[in-house]
Image (spheres, rainbow, N blue to C red):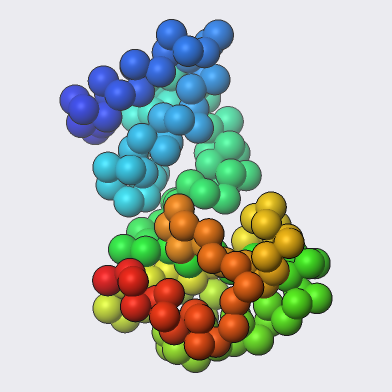
Length: 154
Ligand code: FES
């Protein structure tokens, strides 16, 4: 069941779009902001509110990789694995992160602090290799810098 606040925030988006269905990404982001992820039940509630077929909404959620369909850690680390970052040895930074966090891509650390995810180009190729932690972009990565960045996120 959507909370009153979630419903109110979603409905506040309706005037900004030509149809209710066009609000679908914003609606999922709103629920994710409140709960940390979008469960099957939440997806069903959103589909009913928007009058949008559940399968169609699920397709959008699957395509849009910033919508989480499983619980994630308190902070999400996205490591760019596209070509510019790869040329600049993003694989080494990814390995360092995996070792430091003791987790594999797609997994969450045992303490629930971080979820580690690969992602396509973050649009900051001039600062490769790049990662994003929550909404913060960090570039020109190397292991010492990564360790300092992780300390900022508790
Ligand atoms: S390839 Fe990594 S930011 Fe573009």
